[in-house]
Length: 341
Ligand code: ADP
Ligand code: MG
Picture 1 (cartoon, rainbow, N blue to C red):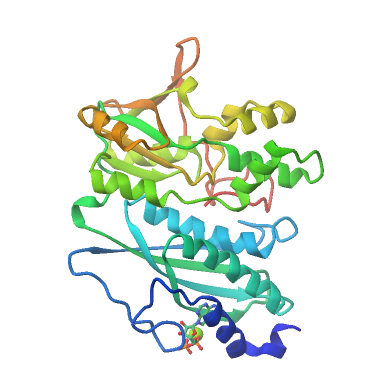
Picture 2 (picture 1 turned 135 degrees about the vertical axis):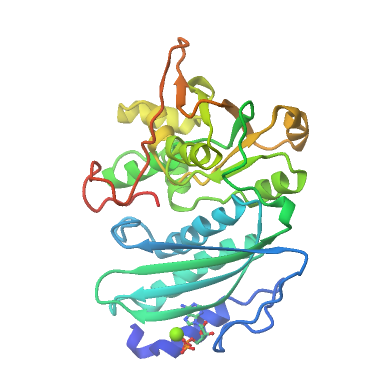
């Protein structure tokens, strides 16, 4: 079967059935001219959108539609998490080549909805078009948070400690494995590939930081530690010193990087798409943070001088420059490579 057998409205009706959720029903969802959503007057509405473009963000010869759906939801949910928000509703707009099959589209929505369900978020609308060239995916997520819970990039102050959740660099190493194609796929390789193809946004951790009011600034790591920390520094008008040996690297990354003959640290500093949370905490709140028992580790400190520095194992300090992906910088990574956003 192809899309023309099913037609636009046949497809939308399948998507609608796939996207029903027991825990959450909008006042008006998919099927009308616009969704009608109940919002709490005590909360602010958070809104975020991200575009995923074939051969810029993903390569269909190396990803399946289920993972692509999952990841399209993940990158947006992660932005709500990074504000300390609770995601509630979601919209998707797809531009699809006519050769796309209904099965592929529905697999995309299976992956998408599986993560949405896990995150108690519901798809309430979208748009569906034919594309002359390549697959386009635009996802919008709406979330909520009380005003004092919101954690922006602008609140870091000199003396705050810098923390990061999970481990960094796995996704970038996973991408490199995908691009290299064949090779041994042991447990380490599989775990890096999973981190790249199906990242888990840190929604629960973001909420804990928001509710406890421990964090002064926060961002999700989508472009690589060096670039995302630079965003916090810029918005907060501060600098930072990062302790190289404290940057969390997974055992899987260490072993695969050894095989790829590249320093594991490079993946963490400049590789994107980890979707971990990078946040700052005033020294007086560190105990409170520790009581939350989050999977997070201190990697540095915020400074008054506006530079970013990194101190290596010998204690030598050097400049840390943003090295993550920039869509409009001069190409240094090879054309058409899927990369961060
Ligand atoms: P309109 O003509 O008003 O733009 P559409 O025919 O595009 O309406 O869409 C009909 C309904 O289906 C709307 O509720 C819209 O939000 C929803 N919808 C369309 N495409 C998608 C999609 N890809 N994913 C989810 N909902 C969709
Ligand atoms: Mg429409």
